[in-house]
Length: 136
Image (cartoon, rainbow, N blue to C red; front, side, top):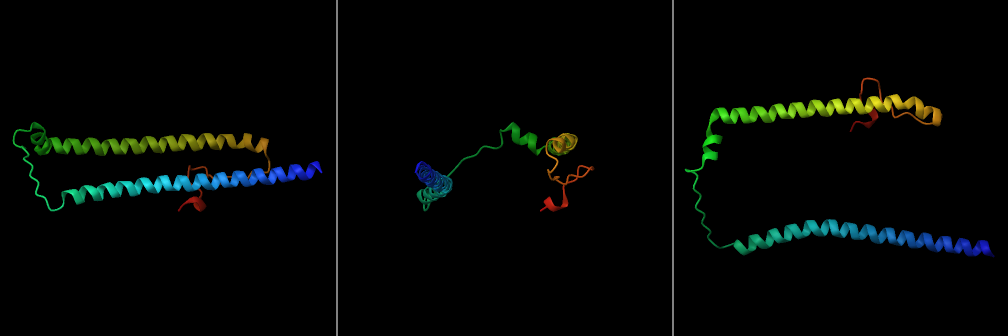
């Protein structure tokens, strides 16, 4: 008799949990797509408000020192060189970080095998290469 009541309570609680998960999922989706819809809707309203009207803007570029600097060929080349070099250095450090991380994981593998001998391998090879099955 007590087992039947416990089983009934378990079923009711699992139903309640599933209903709560479904409601949370629906609300999350509504918020996410509602935000995107809202952005497009307000963009539409701003375009609708300005349609058919003439607007003028006076922009004074002659006195701007920043425009003259960007117009300087050598400054622009130096700026592009700095961004390019920064990208290469960033890529180098990301690659180094990946190798360090995978090296640490590879070293821990023997301890994981001691804890669970039936554990399957991730297929990470020695050269820090990704398992071919994981490549998209």
